[in-house]
Image 1: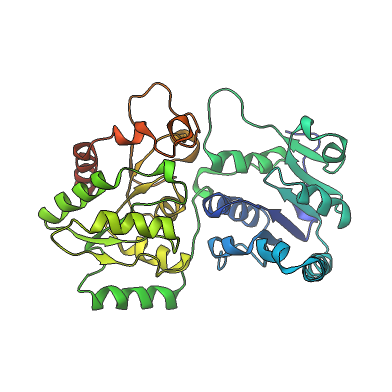
Image 2: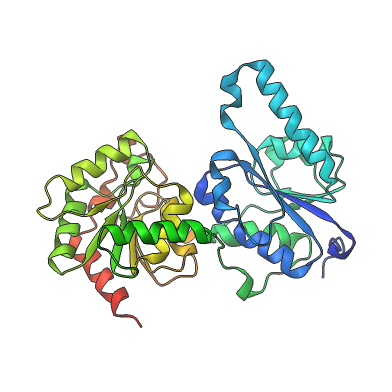
Length: 360
């Protein structure tokens, strides 16, 4: 056992900070579950960017979700200072006993000092200098050698303070809410689609270098339709994603249910939960589908499937044999197109779909 473990029994409130993108925030959801399971008396709060809050809202282990709006910087100095002051006042009123900082963002170090929190844990990052090193009481190491899933890396923050998660506690948690589930069930019914009667495809990503070529996605959808499957397509309300979806759908002889640009994150989660299968890229919607326990077929290119693959769900992860991947580059030569993704054939994806749908 650790000689500097933190005794949760004497704590009242904990703040978990994750200032990253949607998928990153969702992959922190087991941290809240583990804390609440090991110390049911604790009030566990989250601090995230406002646009990612839906990943954690309604989580049964979270007391409050505090948010930072990235647009504060665009609203002028006075408004930004006022908004920051209101957030700080709100956090001060919570009187935290422990801060768990899960990114490299300097705000976590600053808040630990300003809120005068004596117990805190963050990544060990010597290169960040004295301010970082003196801001936290405990540090957990950045992974070296064999890659580990991001969920496990997040949970390392708890292991470092003497909280050891059980296997059953590591599931992702995302709650759409009953009202949203009913709404999406009704919208699907109006399209003539029954629950568990369709395949959900989210073909695009905010990062173009993570996307499968549009022509291959078109061929996949056509083949699935010829096999009798109903298809529901989603995309974020982003111009580049919507253009890609239009390019994919235009050549099809049969129509799909196209919710592209129409759904918020809770609605997207509800649709994924009702699908018999999800097909997509390494992106937040893939993690959402995994959180909803929907079997996942996902194509990986430059990013690492060991760190970012679908978590604890029936899955097929498809990669090419390119020895240069995962490289993390913005497409080959920085050209936004990843040849390793294009090398994954339509036939391989169809085989993966067939294998997963045959599972009981």
